Amino acid sequence: MPLIDYSFLSKILPKAKIKKSFRKLKSDYLFRIRIAMALFFFGKGFCFATWASRIPDLKLSLQLSEADLGTILFFLPIGQLVAMPFSGKIVSRFGSRTVTIYGTLLYALFLTFLGLANTSWQLALALFLFGVFGNFCNIASNTQGVVTQQLFEKPVMGFFHGSWSLAGFFGALVSLLMVYLGLSPFIHFIIAFGFVAIIVALNSKYLVQTKVSKHLEKVKKSIFQVPDKILIWLGVISFCCMASEGIMFDWSGVYFKEIVQAPATLVALGYTCFMITMATGRFLSDLLVQKYGSRKVILTSGIVISVGLYTAVLLPYLITCTIAFMLVGFGVSNVIPIVFNETGKIKSVATETALTIISSISFLGFLIGPPIIGYIAEATSLQYSFATIGIFGFFITLVTYRQKLFK
Image (cartoon, rainbow, N blue to C red; front, side, top):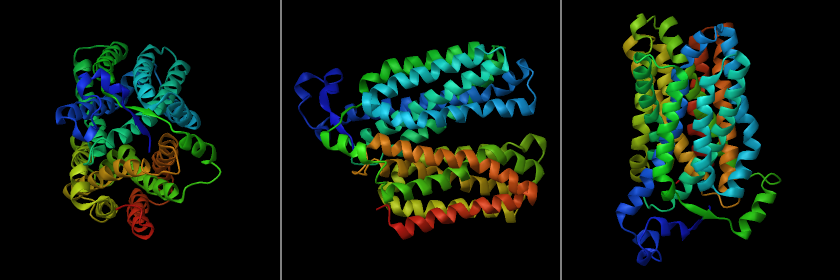
């Protein structure tokens, strides 16, 4: 767990109060720190939602085929994967506060580069760099979130991740406005950069500074030689969760169109309901953890994910599938915030290193889950492929129960 450097208090508190412990500080200062961290998560989510919302326009302007676009889109996860071996070290070297600030700004800056692309290779290069700085931003902000959690007796990680999900809705609404006004993706991305820059400017001083002890320096040198067993199992849980989440992002619309045979106007209903319950679940996550404990929430979440997916398989009708996808959204909403918070408690591994490992494993699930669906669907049917992924939820519950990872 990173140690807090209290020097940053001089920027936000009267000098007379700097020597007081955090637990004795007035609630309004703690509230402001919490909001600042949530806004950084919001800015990160807003950048991604802004890019995703204008993909059709960029496809049209560059005259890309479906195959061309699919190939180009793959450069974003490649950039994230390339950055993963270095992101933890950079966060450790410069601190999560600094990397969160500059990583968020660079993430938003390279968003604008996507709008400048005039050829397919330019878009691919911009996406690669967008992925690289997205990974730095992700590792740093989650490390900063774990540090911020230390200041509160009650859970707050769910609130941070909920802010990311909320940004998806906000980004989509802003995109609709930009398209209605006839603004190009580049102008849209410039506006988005300005918005994120304002978030950074107004909230940077409220981010928590950390310091690394000599003990942690020694731990970092041995982390890859002696993997932590708890870390491995947390990675397995996050992999299963993100694989389930990934298929909802990529295949929910297809499932409603081909299996449910929903009207064209309702094809996006399942995905929309999934996003709504996922965002709602993340904002409720902290309350649920506080009341029932992380262990019970994770155990229940795994079951809810599987029940949702198997309901969609066994009852492929409009109403039942809508409810099923809502269950999946609520199920996946709690897992990652809890896993990330638990990762920060591992004393044998530096937090930024542990989060890099967990993020890498979970992202691998998010990346390979959708293709697995495609391969199974090609060999059998889309319903069978959803049934296969449905096992992951029960596996989350089984691992949590057997390994006793949470309290």
